[in-house]
Image (tube, rainbow, N blue to C red; front, side):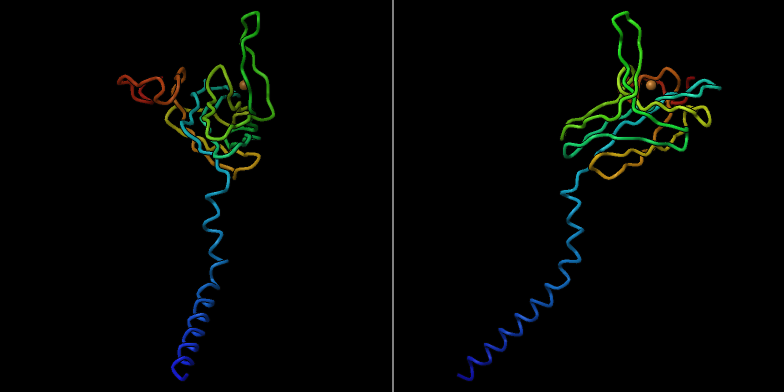
Length: 175
Ligand SMILES: [Cu+2]
């Protein structure tokens, strides 16, 4: 009987200790939350260098969303405005572009903004985009947290970062 009581007490203490140990759990829960939060991964950002007095430029990049999402906006300290544009060829063979209010990002699928397709149009450039430098671009999404991207400026006429298979021509060596 005496022995049983000791055991019961020990069990009670263990239960108490377990409860105490369990207390901090709720505060640590948010650290495991981001795994389920939607995220958008940004890769291969780039922009083309612009002529000296240009007021517009374009930014290209690839977006991969962990869950269905939508690119809803962009901004940069380098320009008054950053708008999402879509370029397309008219029946008459003229390349034209129009603003679009968002870009759907299917889950797990990489969506690429590239020349003659989607791009972030910078209008009201505060200074020309100079090869070898970078600009900061802030992207916003319908669900995922905003993403700040450092965008390298490539030489005028560049076709993209690495995608054009650099055959010995180093960025910044040519204009
Ligand atoms: Cu445009």
